Length: 134
Image 1 (spheres, one colour):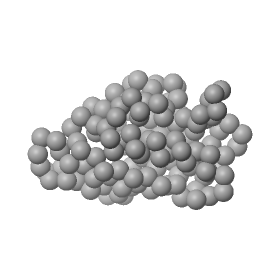
Image 2: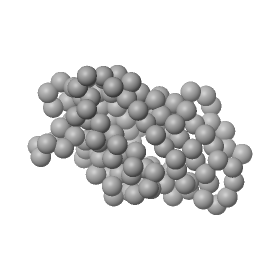
Image 3: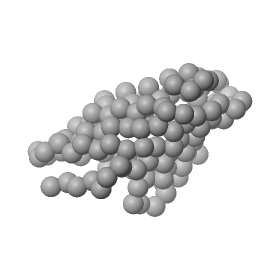
């Protein structure tokens, strides 16, 4: 991990754990109120509640999830930070069907809140190859 990213690694770990548990409240707790999500192939999603609803509707509700994300590089500058890295995501339809495995990359931004907690302020991600559900 790049020097200094240890301060934002906890929020990354909490985000991953919440996604794997499909725990929408724990997931929301990792996000700043003004978070902006730039999901692939869809318009931007602005705000904690809207972004959490997007994730819930498109990932948590329809799938069992096996997710991991790791930082490759980034920097912390005072109360703001950025990190880029890679992720793996296995989605198994809860209604039945084959697991879809996705490998991709991301770019995230973070801000340290007044209470000292770091939160996601921006999330951009995309897959390394087209995703096909059968």
